[in-house]
Image 1 (cartoon, chains in turn orange, purple):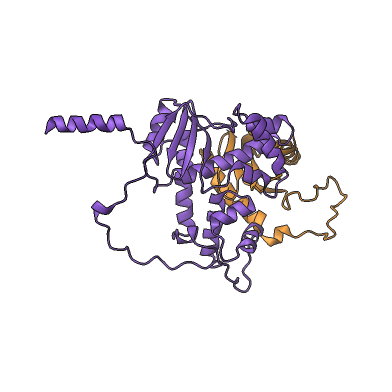
Image 2: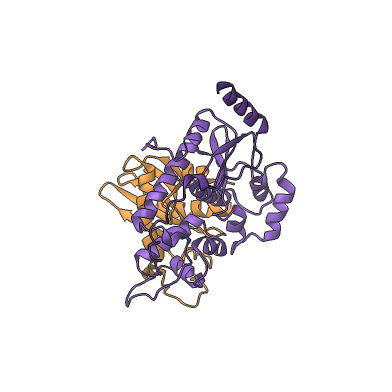
Length: 141
Length: 258
């Protein structure tokens, strides 16, 4: 059963991975970090990504669902009912990708995984899927 | 960003350097150290791991009580919750780290009075994910600065939270809506944190954000300082177990110098 460090280590094995962290978006605290930070300091990166994640997680625009029946879609892999309303957030920069994946826990929390990828060697689609699995594994084992 | 310029607790810095194991007791909470690293913290101001896990969470209170009964004596309650399948490692770490940094923020608050350290004392929850004392210090300082950057008036921290109507077109996030819905005009941020099963600092921060947005009443700034109390009338801090022998030796030594 993986803990925070095992999950971050696994995220770092993805192609092009440069840095990974688990961050609380209410406080901006990094609960765990691996690899590098784009600004040379994981704590600064955690505080900055937390602001971005908080906006996405809190604004109504991103909370609205297409389907109000509440039964969950049947396309692809539907999130279980009560899963994070916002699943992930992707920021593309000239040199890299940032994937922020929200983590749903069984108790009240506000955490996400942040993975920073090199733009040339990273595979965004793969990273997004794997990060989803890692986020699930972190809380479901 | 490696060193803290002015440590919030010089004693914590010293204990970390000497890799001490024990409990650091301060006015507003206790930090537990193993080999100089912080393994647990608790504060009356912050909801404990039990509140965070069982309030609205998946863990029934009975399961928590069972874990404390069966593993408390071995200081392995956290481990028991995972080994008995109640919780996953990741969840335990997320919840426990959140609770530790939360309690540490209040335990290390600057108004704290005397600090004492009891060598060898451990906590029954057990070690989950030790963090360096330096990281705890740094985060505590960062949190203070963050609160003041959002809304620099701490009066809202302890006053009952009284919601104000939103301005036309003003939106409130989902978590803050839940906070406002629970605010009945009497509950303080600390009480709301306990009710919602959220860390107390998170609730303080949200209340300051709401204050900055004009969505909660902001108490008037307290009236000017009351007349200073003459020093002679200052209350004597409560001392549970005065060291009589030491006091006698001190008295004797003083008398010998007279």
